[in-house]
Length: 297
Ligand SMILES: [Zn+2]
Image (tube, rainbow, N blue to C red; front, side, top):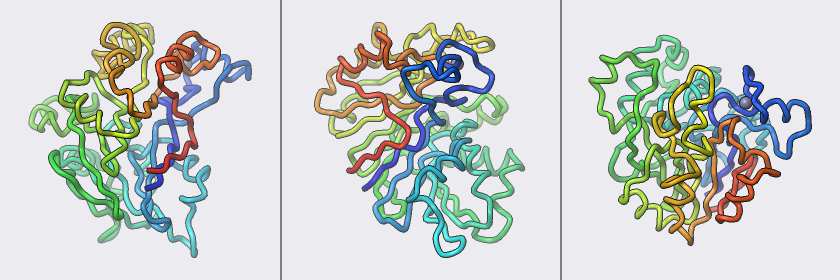
């Protein structure tokens, strides 16, 4: 299986259009030891003619253009045959609307995310303009499923539904279907939004070769300093990297696993490769995933 990491930033990207934090300011000025990043996005394939996207980021059009494997052939035949959604947030789903140009594909999501997008949001009707345009498949929370010949399993998480889902709708849905991680090919775990790592999940990760893990925030207090957010990293469902029981500490025992941070918020100091925090992450055996990376499983 080939995996392409198309984007590595959290929602908003890096730099973020309305942000002038030290990172965003310096990357715009060209004086930053690090690179701009698009919003988190993967694509994988077991067969060069069929690629599956993991989520559909708002940057998807640019990410496809930057990845020759995803370019269309023979007129308008796209190799993108499926999309797996791990949640229903804007930065996981907005790109679906960009795939509306009379192309047929599958969307794998939990039943709850399918219902939110297809029953509550009429805009997603652009994906139902003709019979067979999109084939929605419900992801089982237990056991495996297949897409374009690849074996995938859901990793259960205790997330919450996006803030745009009204409270009565969210209360009527199974909380286990709000947010999932993925295990690709039995060996690559994709967990871009994790509030805590229960022992059962930690044990499951031990058998993986590669982990792409939530690198949204360096510290628990980091998002509280972002105007409008005012909550801690854990309160918004992201385990911070540093501090007691942060991911560096919590996942330190996964010594045989290639560990990479993904879904990195523009405020996170690990984006700056001259920072102490970047050095600390690298010294702890972690990599910071880069847009365009390729991983062979
Ligand atoms: Zn910023």
